[in-house]
Structures are given as structure tokens and as C-alpha cells.
Length: 195
Ligand SMILES: Cc1cc2nc3c(=O)[nH]c(=O)nc-3n(C[C@H](O)[C@H](O)[C@H](O)COP(=O)(O)O)c2cc1C
Image (tube, rainbow, N blue to C red):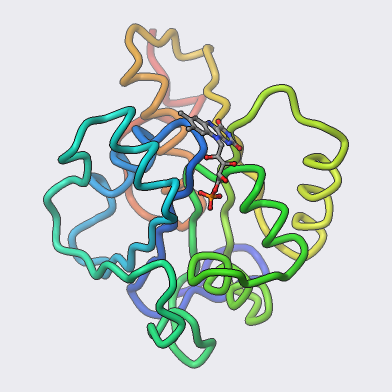
């Protein structure tokens, strides 16, 4: 499977990382809507788990078939470039994890899996949520974009006249799925939008 960018999409596997930035609803919606034929490999940071529980309640993880890896399990397949995937999305991505990935620190499995995507030339979509951004955050985003990552921040558009929080969430999640060439019906392309 290929897409139009310089990246090659390998296998029907997608890695989803969740960190402790606000916006766990984006992650929940994404996991719910990734097509069933895609093998989802999930890794959640310790604070990702805590913030998701705080924002969405105890049973926040949607019931779908997925493979969950522990955050410090460096023996997991996604820690190795030899395990082929179509890439990874980190949603929401804290500015802390963003900085660690930009610095190549690989301090936990999530950061390592992201680092693997960069070194292997696979798609890495980062969905930071913070405001305002400091010059350090912006510098890290710049470095990551140069390294091949896509910075797709949690920044919904309003031109489709959203009527609910769900509409706003769907806009961002739809854009994430678009970036992996995965089918989605969460939002329409601009020229298809009807008002
Ligand atoms: C309720 C709550 C909301 C937070 N929201 C954000 C946020 O929007 N963006 C961010 O970068 N960090 C946010 N943080 C801080 C991160 O959770 C913190 O920096 C943590 O160390 C991130 O670790 P992780 O990247 O390993 O998940 C929030 C923390 C809490 C408790």
C-alpha cells in the first residue's frame, strides 16, 4: 500500500500512542473509527492513562480488537524497525513527549516507537495540544517536521459549521485518518461539504 508522499505504508498495522495532554476524546474517537481490518497497536503513557480516566471516566478505552503494549515494554514488536507498520499517530501528544521525540530520547515504548517511525521513514503524525506554545515547543515541532513527522495539532476548522463537540473532534480525527489514507466519514472534504 502506498500513499502520495515519500513514505511507504507497510502492512495493515497502525500504532496509536496516547499521552497525558488534554484531548483523550480525540484518541477514543480515532480508535473507534479506524477500520476493522487495520491491526491497531496501542501504547499509552502513564499520564495518558490518568488524564484519559480523568476526562472520560474509568472505562474510557473503546471496545475494539487491538493489541495493547505496556509503556515500558521495550521487547514489544513496535520497538523494532523490522516490525513493519504503516506508521504511528500520537494523539493527544503532550509537549513533553513531543520534546522527547524531537530529542530522540526513546525514554519509553511510545517514544521509541515514534523514533522507529522516523528512522525507518514511516509516517509519524503528532497531534499536540497545548496553548500557547513556547518557542521550545515550536522549535521541537520544527525539528520534527524536518525529520519527516506531520504536526497535525488538535485544531478543528469551523468552516463546516460544527454544531457539537463531536463535530469538532470528528474534524481532527478525520484529518488524522486522511493522513494514513484510511477511509473515514467523519468529515467531508471542503468541496464536498454541503451547508
Ligand atoms: C488534567 C491534565 C491536563 C493536561 N493537559 C496537557 C495538555 O493539554 N498538553 C500538555 O502538553 N500537557 C498537559 N498536561 C501535562 C502532561 O500530562 C505532563 O506534562 C506529563 O508529564 C506528560 O507525560 P507523557 O507525555 O508521558 O504523557 C496535563 C496534565 C493534566 C493532569
